[in-house]
Length: 460
View 1 (cartoon, one colour):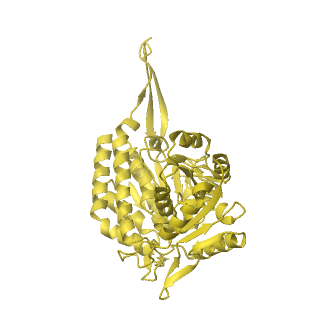
View 2 (tube, one colour; view 1 turned 90 degrees about the horizontal axis):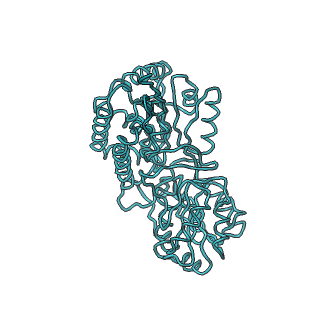
View 3 (cartoon, rainbow, N blue to C red; view 1 turned 180 degrees about the vertical axis):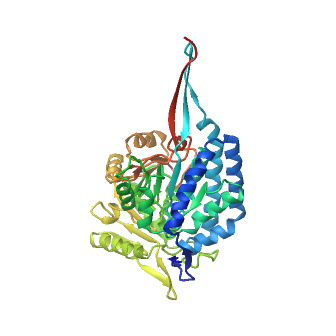
Protein backbone atom coordinates (compact mmCIF):
# COMPACT_ATOMS: atom_id res chain seq x y z
CA UNK A 1 0.00 0.00 0.00
CA UNK A 2 1.41 3.41 -0.95
CA UNK A 3 1.61 6.07 1.71
CA UNK A 4 1.93 9.81 2.25
CA UNK A 5 4.55 11.03 4.71
CA UNK A 6 4.31 14.28 6.68
CA UNK A 7 7.60 15.42 8.19
CA UNK A 8 7.51 16.87 11.70
CA UNK A 9 8.59 20.56 11.54
CA UNK A 10 10.23 20.28 14.96
CA UNK A 11 12.19 17.24 13.92
CA UNK A 12 10.21 14.53 15.67
CA UNK A 13 8.63 11.43 14.23
CA UNK A 14 7.01 11.73 10.81
CA UNK A 15 3.29 11.13 10.37
CA UNK A 16 2.56 8.37 7.86
CA UNK A 17 -0.87 8.11 6.22
CA UNK A 18 -2.04 5.36 3.85
CA UNK A 19 -2.79 6.85 0.44
CA UNK A 20 -6.34 6.36 -0.81
CA UNK A 21 -6.27 4.19 -3.93
CA UNK A 22 -8.03 4.99 -7.18
CA UNK A 23 -10.55 2.20 -6.60
CA UNK A 24 -11.25 3.49 -3.11
CA UNK A 25 -11.79 7.01 -4.40
CA UNK A 26 -14.19 5.71 -7.04
CA UNK A 27 -16.20 3.92 -4.36
CA UNK A 28 -16.14 7.02 -2.15
CA UNK A 29 -17.57 9.29 -4.81
CA UNK A 30 -20.23 6.83 -5.92
CA UNK A 31 -21.14 6.23 -2.30
CA UNK A 32 -21.30 9.94 -1.57
CA UNK A 33 -23.80 10.46 -4.40
CA UNK A 34 -26.00 7.68 -3.02
CA UNK A 35 -25.75 8.95 0.56
CA UNK A 36 -26.66 12.47 -0.47
CA UNK A 37 -29.80 11.39 -2.31
CA UNK A 38 -31.08 9.95 0.94
CA UNK A 39 -29.72 12.72 3.16
CA UNK A 40 -31.38 15.52 1.19
CA UNK A 41 -34.79 14.12 2.17
CA UNK A 42 -34.13 14.32 5.91
CA UNK A 43 -35.48 17.07 8.15
CA UNK A 44 -33.37 19.92 9.41
CA UNK A 45 -34.00 18.63 12.93
CA UNK A 46 -32.35 15.34 11.99
CA UNK A 47 -29.40 17.15 10.43
CA UNK A 48 -28.95 19.36 13.46
CA UNK A 49 -28.99 16.30 15.72
CA UNK A 50 -26.28 14.64 13.63
CA UNK A 51 -24.18 17.82 13.62
CA UNK A 52 -24.53 18.10 17.40
CA UNK A 53 -23.39 14.52 17.83
CA UNK A 54 -20.43 14.94 15.50
CA UNK A 55 -19.35 18.11 17.26
CA UNK A 56 -19.55 16.33 20.59
CA UNK A 57 -17.32 13.56 19.25
CA UNK A 58 -14.72 16.11 18.14
CA UNK A 59 -14.82 17.89 21.48
CA UNK A 60 -14.20 14.56 23.21
CA UNK A 61 -11.14 14.08 20.98
CA UNK A 62 -9.70 17.54 21.60
CA UNK A 63 -6.35 16.34 22.92
CA UNK A 64 -5.66 13.85 20.13
CA UNK A 65 -6.74 16.34 17.47
CA UNK A 66 -4.55 19.09 18.93
CA UNK A 67 -1.58 16.73 19.18
CA UNK A 68 -1.97 15.71 15.54
CA UNK A 69 -2.01 19.36 14.47
CA UNK A 70 1.14 20.11 16.47
CA UNK A 71 2.96 17.10 15.04
CA UNK A 72 1.95 17.76 11.43
CA UNK A 73 2.41 21.52 11.13
CA UNK A 74 4.20 22.64 14.29
CA UNK A 75 1.52 24.77 15.92
CA UNK A 76 2.13 25.10 19.68
CA UNK A 77 -0.20 22.72 21.52
CA UNK A 78 -1.89 25.53 23.44
CA UNK A 79 -2.76 27.22 20.14
CA UNK A 80 -3.90 23.91 18.64
CA UNK A 81 -6.31 23.46 21.53
CA UNK A 82 -7.50 26.99 20.89
CA UNK A 83 -8.19 26.06 17.29
CA UNK A 84 -10.41 23.20 18.45
CA UNK A 85 -12.37 25.73 20.52
CA UNK A 86 -12.64 28.06 17.53
CA UNK A 87 -13.90 25.19 15.38
CA UNK A 88 -16.59 24.46 17.98
CA UNK A 89 -17.71 28.10 18.00
CA UNK A 90 -18.02 28.18 14.21
CA UNK A 91 -19.95 24.91 14.05
CA UNK A 92 -22.32 26.02 16.80
CA UNK A 93 -22.86 29.37 15.09
CA UNK A 94 -23.77 27.74 11.78
CA UNK A 95 -26.10 25.33 13.58
CA UNK A 96 -27.80 28.25 15.29
CA UNK A 97 -28.18 30.17 12.01
CA UNK A 98 -29.35 27.19 9.95
CA UNK A 99 -33.12 27.24 10.66
CA UNK A 100 -33.58 30.79 9.43
CA UNK A 101 -30.89 30.68 6.73
CA UNK A 102 -32.25 27.48 5.13
CA UNK A 103 -35.93 28.31 5.46
CA UNK A 104 -38.05 28.81 2.35
CA UNK A 105 -38.48 32.41 1.24
CA UNK A 106 -42.19 33.20 0.97
CA UNK A 107 -43.07 36.04 -1.37
CA UNK A 108 -45.87 38.53 -0.91
CA UNK A 109 -49.31 36.92 -1.25
CA UNK A 110 -50.70 36.70 -4.75
CA UNK A 111 -54.29 35.58 -5.24
CA UNK A 112 -54.61 32.00 -6.54
CA UNK A 113 -50.87 31.39 -6.48
CA UNK A 114 -48.27 29.93 -4.18
CA UNK A 115 -44.82 31.43 -4.71
CA UNK A 116 -41.74 30.65 -2.68
CA UNK A 117 -38.03 30.00 -3.06
CA UNK A 118 -36.64 26.72 -1.80
CA UNK A 119 -32.95 26.34 -0.94
CA UNK A 120 -31.88 22.95 -2.27
CA UNK A 121 -28.67 21.06 -1.53
CA UNK A 122 -26.01 21.08 -4.24
CA UNK A 123 -25.09 17.38 -3.96
CA UNK A 124 -21.54 16.27 -3.15
CA UNK A 125 -19.27 19.03 -1.85
CA UNK A 126 -15.50 18.62 -2.15
CA UNK A 127 -13.96 20.53 0.75
CA UNK A 128 -10.23 21.26 0.33
CA UNK A 129 -9.01 22.94 3.54
CA UNK A 130 -5.60 24.48 4.20
CA UNK A 131 -2.92 23.23 6.58
CA UNK A 132 -2.32 26.43 8.56
CA UNK A 133 -5.69 26.29 10.34
CA UNK A 134 -6.71 22.74 9.47
CA UNK A 135 -9.85 22.71 11.61
CA UNK A 136 -11.07 26.25 11.00
CA UNK A 137 -10.69 26.11 7.23
CA UNK A 138 -12.48 22.74 7.16
CA UNK A 139 -15.40 23.50 9.45
CA UNK A 140 -16.39 26.52 7.33
CA UNK A 141 -17.76 24.06 4.76
CA UNK A 142 -18.25 20.68 6.48
CA UNK A 143 -20.94 21.55 9.00
CA UNK A 144 -23.01 24.00 6.92
CA UNK A 145 -22.80 21.68 3.91
CA UNK A 146 -24.20 18.75 5.90
CA UNK A 147 -26.86 20.95 7.48
CA UNK A 148 -27.92 22.07 4.00
CA UNK A 149 -28.39 18.46 2.87
CA UNK A 150 -25.10 17.81 1.08
CA UNK A 151 -22.60 14.97 1.32
CA UNK A 152 -19.00 16.03 1.92
CA UNK A 153 -15.69 14.65 0.73
CA UNK A 154 -12.78 16.24 2.62
CA UNK A 155 -9.44 16.33 0.87
CA UNK A 156 -7.14 17.97 3.37
CA UNK A 157 -3.78 19.49 2.56
CA UNK A 158 -0.94 16.92 2.45
CA UNK A 159 0.55 18.84 5.39
CA UNK A 160 -2.49 18.12 7.65
CA UNK A 161 -4.19 15.00 6.28
CA UNK A 162 -5.24 13.51 9.62
CA UNK A 163 -7.61 16.41 10.29
CA UNK A 164 -9.92 15.32 7.48
CA UNK A 165 -10.24 11.90 9.06
CA UNK A 166 -11.06 13.47 12.44
CA UNK A 167 -14.13 15.10 10.88
CA UNK A 168 -15.17 11.95 9.03
CA UNK A 169 -14.73 9.79 12.13
CA UNK A 170 -16.77 12.20 14.26
CA UNK A 171 -19.71 12.03 11.86
CA UNK A 172 -19.51 8.25 11.74
CA UNK A 173 -19.55 8.09 15.53
CA UNK A 174 -22.60 10.34 15.54
CA UNK A 175 -24.46 7.89 13.29
CA UNK A 176 -24.13 9.55 9.89
CA UNK A 177 -25.31 7.54 6.88
CA UNK A 178 -22.54 5.53 5.28
CA UNK A 179 -20.24 7.74 3.18
CA UNK A 180 -22.03 11.00 4.00
CA UNK A 181 -18.80 12.57 5.29
CA UNK A 182 -15.53 11.04 4.08
CA UNK A 183 -11.84 11.93 4.03
CA UNK A 184 -9.60 11.15 1.08
CA UNK A 185 -5.82 10.99 1.44
CA UNK A 186 -4.12 12.04 -1.77
CA UNK A 187 -1.55 14.31 -3.37
CA UNK A 188 -2.20 17.49 -5.37
CA UNK A 189 -2.41 15.75 -8.74
CA UNK A 190 -5.11 13.35 -7.58
CA UNK A 191 -6.95 16.22 -5.87
CA UNK A 192 -7.14 18.14 -9.13
CA UNK A 193 -8.64 15.03 -10.70
CA UNK A 194 -11.37 15.06 -8.05
CA UNK A 195 -12.32 18.59 -9.06
CA UNK A 196 -12.89 17.46 -12.63
CA UNK A 197 -14.96 14.39 -11.62
CA UNK A 198 -18.63 14.74 -12.57
CA UNK A 199 -19.72 13.24 -9.24
CA UNK A 200 -18.44 16.34 -7.46
CA UNK A 201 -21.08 19.08 -7.51
CA UNK A 202 -19.25 21.89 -5.74
CA UNK A 203 -15.70 22.68 -4.64
CA UNK A 204 -14.57 24.75 -1.65
CA UNK A 205 -10.82 25.44 -1.69
CA UNK A 206 -8.73 27.26 0.91
CA UNK A 207 -5.09 27.88 0.10
CA UNK A 208 -2.65 29.96 -1.89
CA UNK A 209 -3.49 32.10 -4.91
CA UNK A 210 -1.37 29.70 -6.97
CA UNK A 211 -3.44 26.79 -5.67
CA UNK A 212 -6.63 28.64 -6.52
CA UNK A 213 -5.50 28.97 -10.13
CA UNK A 214 -4.79 25.22 -10.21
CA UNK A 215 -8.29 24.46 -8.95
CA UNK A 216 -9.81 26.81 -11.50
CA UNK A 217 -7.88 25.08 -14.28
CA UNK A 218 -9.00 21.67 -13.04
CA UNK A 219 -12.63 22.83 -13.23
CA UNK A 220 -12.37 24.50 -16.63
CA UNK A 221 -14.16 21.74 -18.57
CA UNK A 222 -17.13 21.83 -16.19
CA UNK A 223 -19.70 24.44 -15.25
CA UNK A 224 -18.37 24.58 -11.71
CA UNK A 225 -17.82 27.81 -9.86
CA UNK A 226 -15.33 26.81 -7.12
CA UNK A 227 -15.36 28.84 -3.93
CA UNK A 228 -11.79 30.08 -3.45
CA UNK A 229 -10.47 31.45 -0.18
CA UNK A 230 -6.94 32.45 -1.09
CA UNK A 231 -4.02 34.49 0.18
CA UNK A 232 -3.71 37.84 1.85
CA UNK A 233 -1.24 40.70 2.22
CA UNK A 234 -3.31 42.38 4.85
CA UNK A 235 -2.63 46.02 5.78
CA UNK A 236 -3.16 47.98 8.98
CA UNK A 237 -3.11 51.72 9.61
CA UNK A 238 -2.21 53.19 12.99
CA UNK A 239 -3.58 56.72 12.98
CA UNK A 240 -2.24 59.63 15.01
CA UNK A 241 -5.03 59.28 17.58
CA UNK A 242 -4.67 55.51 18.07
CA UNK A 243 -4.02 53.90 21.42
CA UNK A 244 -0.47 52.92 20.50
CA UNK A 245 0.02 50.42 23.30
CA UNK A 246 -3.08 48.44 22.36
CA UNK A 247 -2.34 48.76 18.64
CA UNK A 248 1.16 47.35 19.11
CA UNK A 249 -0.05 44.49 21.29
CA UNK A 250 -2.68 43.43 18.79
CA UNK A 251 -0.75 44.03 15.58
CA UNK A 252 2.38 42.18 16.66
CA UNK A 253 0.19 39.25 17.71
CA UNK A 254 -1.73 39.56 14.44
CA UNK A 255 1.53 39.26 12.51
CA UNK A 256 3.21 36.53 14.57
CA UNK A 257 0.44 34.27 15.91
CA UNK A 258 0.72 30.76 14.45
CA UNK A 259 4.23 31.81 13.37
CA UNK A 260 2.59 34.28 10.97
CA UNK A 261 1.14 31.44 8.93
CA UNK A 262 -2.30 32.88 8.32
CA UNK A 263 -4.06 34.21 5.25
CA UNK A 264 -5.33 37.16 7.30
CA UNK A 265 -2.13 37.80 9.23
CA UNK A 266 -1.09 41.45 9.39
CA UNK A 267 1.67 41.91 6.82
CA UNK A 268 1.85 45.65 6.12
CA UNK A 269 1.60 48.21 8.92
CA UNK A 270 1.36 51.91 8.06
CA UNK A 271 2.00 54.13 11.07
CA UNK A 272 1.39 57.84 11.24
CA UNK A 273 4.63 59.78 11.56
CA UNK A 274 3.59 61.27 14.92
CA UNK A 275 3.50 57.86 16.61
CA UNK A 276 5.94 55.96 14.37
CA UNK A 277 8.95 55.90 16.71
CA UNK A 278 6.83 55.02 19.73
CA UNK A 279 5.25 52.18 17.78
CA UNK A 280 8.61 50.70 16.77
CA UNK A 281 10.03 51.01 20.28
CA UNK A 282 7.13 49.10 21.81
CA UNK A 283 6.99 46.59 18.97
CA UNK A 284 10.66 45.71 19.40
CA UNK A 285 10.05 44.63 22.98
CA UNK A 286 7.18 42.36 22.01
CA UNK A 287 8.81 40.88 18.92
CA UNK A 288 11.99 40.13 20.87
CA UNK A 289 9.96 38.35 23.55
CA UNK A 290 8.73 35.41 21.49
CA UNK A 291 9.95 32.02 22.70
CA UNK A 292 10.82 29.46 20.03
CA UNK A 293 10.55 25.89 21.18
CA UNK A 294 8.96 22.48 21.21
CA UNK A 295 5.28 22.81 20.22
CA UNK A 296 4.40 20.57 23.18
CA UNK A 297 6.15 22.88 25.67
CA UNK A 298 3.69 25.29 27.31
CA UNK A 299 6.34 28.05 27.30
CA UNK A 300 6.60 28.02 23.50
CA UNK A 301 4.94 31.02 21.87
CA UNK A 302 6.53 30.68 18.43
CA UNK A 303 6.41 27.28 16.76
CA UNK A 304 8.43 26.02 13.80
CA UNK A 305 7.63 26.85 10.18
CA UNK A 306 5.41 24.15 8.70
CA UNK A 307 6.57 24.06 5.08
CA UNK A 308 10.29 23.51 4.39
CA UNK A 309 10.44 25.95 1.47
CA UNK A 310 8.93 28.82 3.43
CA UNK A 311 12.05 29.38 5.52
CA UNK A 312 14.09 30.29 2.46
CA UNK A 313 11.28 32.51 1.18
CA UNK A 314 11.19 34.41 4.47
CA UNK A 315 14.96 34.91 4.36
CA UNK A 316 14.63 36.25 0.84
CA UNK A 317 11.90 38.71 1.87
CA UNK A 318 14.07 40.10 4.67
CA UNK A 319 17.20 40.27 2.51
CA UNK A 320 15.32 42.11 -0.24
CA UNK A 321 13.86 44.59 2.23
CA UNK A 322 17.23 45.24 3.87
CA UNK A 323 18.88 45.78 0.48
CA UNK A 324 16.23 48.38 -0.32
CA UNK A 325 16.63 50.35 2.90
CA UNK A 326 14.58 48.55 5.55
CA UNK A 327 15.93 48.51 9.10
CA UNK A 328 16.07 45.02 10.60
CA UNK A 329 15.24 45.98 14.19
CA UNK A 330 14.76 42.46 15.57
CA UNK A 331 15.16 38.92 14.28
CA UNK A 332 15.47 38.39 10.56
CA UNK A 333 17.04 34.94 10.35
CA UNK A 334 16.26 31.25 10.28
CA UNK A 335 16.93 29.41 13.52
CA UNK A 336 16.93 26.03 15.21
CA UNK A 337 17.19 24.71 18.75
CA UNK A 338 20.39 22.69 19.10
CA UNK A 339 20.00 21.83 15.44
CA UNK A 340 16.39 20.76 15.86
CA UNK A 341 13.38 22.28 14.12
CA UNK A 342 12.98 24.76 11.26
CA UNK A 343 12.24 28.12 12.81
CA UNK A 344 12.25 31.70 11.66
CA UNK A 345 12.84 34.36 14.27
CA UNK A 346 10.07 36.81 15.03
CA UNK A 347 11.19 39.79 12.97
CA UNK A 348 10.58 43.54 13.04
CA UNK A 349 11.34 45.62 9.95
CA UNK A 350 11.17 49.42 9.98
CA UNK A 351 11.51 51.98 7.18
CA UNK A 352 9.69 49.71 4.72
CA UNK A 353 8.24 50.85 1.40
CA UNK A 354 6.37 49.51 -1.60
CA UNK A 355 9.51 48.78 -3.60
CA UNK A 356 10.10 45.85 -1.26
CA UNK A 357 8.77 42.38 -2.00
CA UNK A 358 7.54 42.05 1.58
CA UNK A 359 4.93 44.72 0.78
CA UNK A 360 4.01 43.26 -2.59
CA UNK A 361 3.46 39.54 -1.89
CA UNK A 362 2.26 37.21 0.83
CA UNK A 363 4.89 36.25 3.40
CA UNK A 364 3.91 33.24 5.49
CA UNK A 365 5.97 33.91 8.57
CA UNK A 366 6.36 36.00 11.76
CA UNK A 367 7.47 39.27 10.17
CA UNK A 368 6.22 42.68 11.36
CA UNK A 369 6.81 45.19 8.53
CA UNK A 370 6.28 48.89 9.21
CA UNK A 371 6.14 51.96 6.97
CA UNK A 372 5.83 55.59 8.05
CA UNK A 373 3.02 57.67 6.51
CA UNK A 374 2.17 61.34 6.92
CA UNK A 375 -1.58 61.44 6.19
CA UNK A 376 -4.73 59.33 6.19
CA UNK A 377 -4.89 59.73 2.43
CA UNK A 378 -1.40 58.32 1.98
CA UNK A 379 -2.23 55.37 4.23
CA UNK A 380 -5.41 54.57 2.29
CA UNK A 381 -3.64 54.75 -1.06
CA UNK A 382 -0.91 52.39 0.11
CA UNK A 383 -3.33 49.98 1.78
CA UNK A 384 -5.20 49.52 -1.52
CA UNK A 385 -1.97 49.17 -3.51
CA UNK A 386 -2.07 45.36 -3.58
CA UNK A 387 -3.34 42.57 -5.79
CA UNK A 388 -4.81 40.91 -2.69
CA UNK A 389 -7.76 42.00 -0.60
CA UNK A 390 -8.76 39.85 2.35
CA UNK A 391 -8.83 42.03 5.48
CA UNK A 392 -7.62 45.45 6.62
CA UNK A 393 -7.60 47.17 9.99
CA UNK A 394 -7.75 50.81 11.10
CA UNK A 395 -6.49 51.77 14.53
CA UNK A 396 -8.07 55.00 15.70
CA UNK A 397 -10.29 56.50 18.39
CA UNK A 398 -12.42 58.11 15.69
CA UNK A 399 -15.26 55.94 14.40
CA UNK A 400 -15.87 58.31 11.50
CA UNK A 401 -12.28 57.88 10.33
CA UNK A 402 -12.73 54.10 10.45
CA UNK A 403 -15.98 54.43 8.48
CA UNK A 404 -14.30 56.51 5.79
CA UNK A 405 -11.60 53.90 5.42
CA UNK A 406 -14.13 51.07 5.43
CA UNK A 407 -16.02 52.54 2.50
CA UNK A 408 -12.85 52.93 0.42
CA UNK A 409 -10.77 49.88 1.33
CA UNK A 410 -10.71 47.12 -1.29
CA UNK A 411 -11.04 44.04 0.87
CA UNK A 412 -13.56 41.61 2.31
CA UNK A 413 -13.39 42.59 5.99
CA UNK A 414 -12.53 45.92 7.60
CA UNK A 415 -11.68 46.03 11.31
CA UNK A 416 -11.52 48.95 13.68
CA UNK A 417 -9.12 48.38 16.57
CA UNK A 418 -8.76 44.63 16.01
CA UNK A 419 -7.21 42.32 13.43
CA UNK A 420 -6.50 38.72 12.48
CA UNK A 421 -9.87 37.65 13.78
CA UNK A 422 -13.06 36.14 12.45
CA UNK A 423 -16.62 36.44 13.71
CA UNK A 424 -18.59 33.45 12.31
CA UNK A 425 -21.78 35.52 12.20
CA UNK A 426 -20.11 37.76 9.61
CA UNK A 427 -19.38 36.52 6.07
CA UNK A 428 -15.78 35.69 5.22
CA UNK A 429 -14.98 36.88 1.72
CA UNK A 430 -12.02 38.05 -0.33
CA UNK A 431 -11.71 40.37 -3.30
CA UNK A 432 -9.07 40.71 -6.03
CA UNK A 433 -6.71 37.72 -5.96
CA UNK A 434 -7.77 36.82 -2.43
CA UNK A 435 -10.53 34.73 -3.92
CA UNK A 436 -14.26 34.63 -4.42
CA UNK A 437 -17.27 33.18 -2.72
CA UNK A 438 -18.64 33.46 0.80
CA UNK A 439 -18.29 31.25 3.84
CA UNK A 440 -19.79 31.45 7.33
CA UNK A 441 -22.68 33.68 8.45
CA UNK A 442 -26.20 33.14 7.17
CA UNK A 443 -24.92 33.99 3.70
CA UNK A 444 -22.59 31.01 3.83
CA UNK A 445 -25.54 28.67 3.37
CA UNK A 446 -26.40 30.36 0.08
CA UNK A 447 -23.06 29.19 -1.31
CA UNK A 448 -23.90 25.58 -0.40
CA UNK A 449 -27.42 25.54 -1.81
CA UNK A 450 -29.16 26.50 -5.04
CA UNK A 451 -32.47 28.33 -5.27
CA UNK A 452 -35.48 26.56 -6.74
CA UNK A 453 -38.57 28.60 -7.63
CA UNK A 454 -41.95 27.18 -6.62
CA UNK A 455 -44.65 28.74 -8.81
CA UNK A 456 -48.01 27.01 -8.27
CA UNK A 457 -51.34 28.11 -9.70
CA UNK A 458 -53.82 27.01 -7.06
CA UNK A 459 -57.01 28.01 -8.82
CA UNK A 460 -58.16 29.13 -12.26
